[in-house]
Image 1 (tube, rainbow, N blue to C red):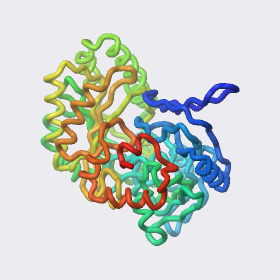
Image 2 (image 1 turned 135 degrees about the horizontal axis):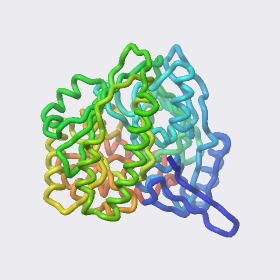
Image 3 (image 1 turned 180 degrees about the vertical axis):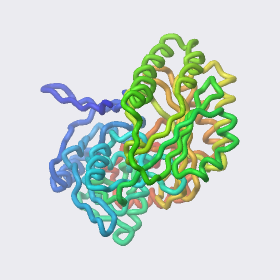
Length: 443
């Protein structure tokens, strides 16, 4: 999967573009600090010059959370495992470490994260700062697995945070949207490596909707995809098992993960973009092409999948008891409209957590994610979906397309004022500000 780009050549301004290509920015300069001390100096110098500072990971956010006309910090040189504490069950990693590299390094040491999202191209700090999550009955987002972090603040200080040290900053900075400072290191909870058995099974929409609570209660990790223009879904249940590893055979893996999920899916989306009227027929064929399968492997090989078909995404977190109703409304809205949707709709869950601006903060949560193939008009679909999600008290994912502002967000996050008050204290001059943060946090 590609990453964002920032190129510089003599005489040309630097250009930055995110993975989906829907956000661009032209920073005054791009820096790749080789040490935390160097980063502190970058922040001090920028503040003295009146320039704003934003750290950017691999550009997997669909919002302008990392866009800046000031100093763009690439943390890629701040990477790697700093320390493994087996007694405490933690690993400390530099912020620019890519999740793929972390997962492989942990597995080599016989360790694993408890839960993760389905993409592992992001940096650890980028993923946690925007609230990247997978699905789980008991285990929450990656940010909820943080046990400590280091943060360079607007005055260039290095702040160490945990439940015991600067606890009020820790409560917020685990998911800080880049508003509180630049995260330089993160300590994550880890556990001994374990096996997951995945069971993928096609299922009718009405059955999944009727049995949703049952599936969530009975499985450690349950998610499903609904194919618009059809009554078909694909479900996935991941549960711990004794092993041994029994991954999909090479041919089966290639058919499901490469041919269907990337190769044919890319071709189908390209055809749908050229001939939108063909999309419902393509959806009916695609939703029937997937077959039931069961396999067992170590966690990151089960949780994550290659995603080479580029798209734009909106995702909302709803109170879990409202999700089936909202999904039925979305299905009815698509059926009533002339919209042609070639991407499945994804539904996942998370337990309540205690992070100030986590989408699951203080409530049992379910997520509905809607996608459109890159280059196709998405506004009408996303607007219709957002109208439904907000009517159910939805909270938008911080790194995915949405139109909400501080006034709305203050109404759905009980601790919103706690976060903005902390921001006023840590960054009164908005060294880490940008247009996106002005919209979602106010000024």
